[in-house]
Every structure is written in structure tokens, then in C-alpha cells.
Image 1: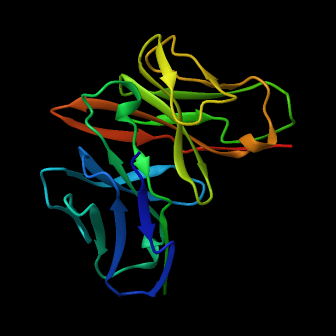
Image 2: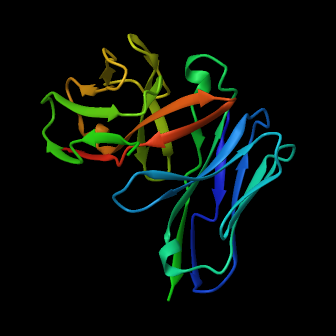
Image 3: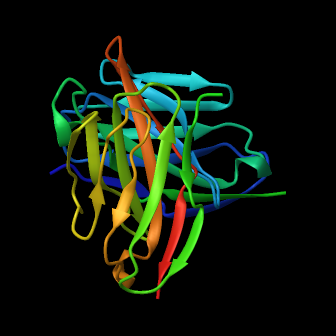
Amino acid sequence: KQEVTQIPAALSVPEGENLVLNCSFTDSAIYNLQWFRQDPGKGLTSLLLIQSSQREQTSGRLNASLDKSSGRSTLYIAASQPGDSATYLCAVSPNPFSSGSARQLTFGSGTQLTVLP
Amino acid sequence: EAQVTQNPRYLITVTGKKLTVTCSQNMNHEYMSWYRQDPGLGLRQIYYSMNVEVTDKGDVPEGYKVSRKEKRNFPLILESPSPNQTSLYFCASSYLAGGQETQYFGPGTRLLVL
């Protein structure tokens, strides 16, 4: 059964720092990997989606990489800002052409990021 | 605006009193699912639906029911809530296009069962 781990569970950094969040998964047979952001009292917002054939995706100050063979992904945030404070979740999905529960996302427990002004 | 909506957003109830959490999406997505989120456990899937009238169990279905009579709605029903169902619940929907599947999540429903 797929397991997703995120380290660290919490991270506090001063504004302006570059930082890296880590995600590891046990079964490399994934279809894609998504990074989500969760703000208190709000739902999940998809930040980046990396297909299994890709190595990285970029959106603004965010860069996500994927090393499928080693079961790892990183989310790099450049020049962090207080507005980046949130919980960041990674989730892996199996082949979406599979049926039923085989399509479900497996989530990590998240990294709670605090960017201090 | 494309979105997934859930109601209510917050709910306090007592053990055994039936409740329903509604979920609706306006994106014509076929796949919908319910997750619960608990500290240290991440999000776990409760039920999912591949399409109208097609539903099945996820990882933690005990104590929950769902129905999918219309494509846009996927309510979560707790027939006899218990304190261990106190949690944060998320509804999600997705659409498969060009091999890509991105899931859209609702804002969450925080449930407290006394």
C-alpha cells in the first residue's frame, strides 16, 4: 500500500529565505504527484502537478521536482513571504485510467510552514 | 466560477443524530469523492463515485453513506454520528482530460460530535 511521508512536519523561517519541503513515497508506480496548499479554515488549492514522465514543474516562485525512481519530490519556495505561511501537502495518484478506488489520491500529513516577517 | 461547495461549513451535533453534509460541483466532473482529515493521519478517502448511481467505498467508509443521484451533487450522510467521526471533511471532484487529472477540493466542513 502506498505511503507518503513529509518531512519536516513544521518549519519556521524568516522572510526572504529560500526553502525546501520534502515528500517521499513508497511505491514508485505513480501517475502523477501534486503539491497542495491548505490555509486554516479553507480547502486545498492545487499548486503544481508533475506527471510521472516529468522531472519538474515551475510556477512563479515555486518549483517542484520529482525523482520517481527514488520515490522523492521536493517543493522549492524562493524568497519566502509571510503570505506563504500555510500547510503544504503532497499527494500521489495512481493511473487515472484505473477503476474506482485505484484513482484515489494518497496524501502525506503535510508540512506546516510559518514565514516570519 | 468553477468550484466545489460544501454545506454546512461548521457543524456541532450530538451522538446518534442523523446529519447530511452536502457537496456540489459546477464543473460537470464525473469523479467525486469524500475525504476526512485528522491530525497526523493526513487525508483519507471515505467514499468515491465514478458517475451517477455509481459509488464505492474508500479506505474508511464505516459509519458513512453517500448517494449520487445527480452528477453535480454527492452528499455525505452520517446515519448515527459518533465522537470518533469528529473531523474535517473535504469533498473533491475531478475530470480526466488528455491523461491529466486534477482534483478540486471544497472548502471543508468541520464536524464536532459530542
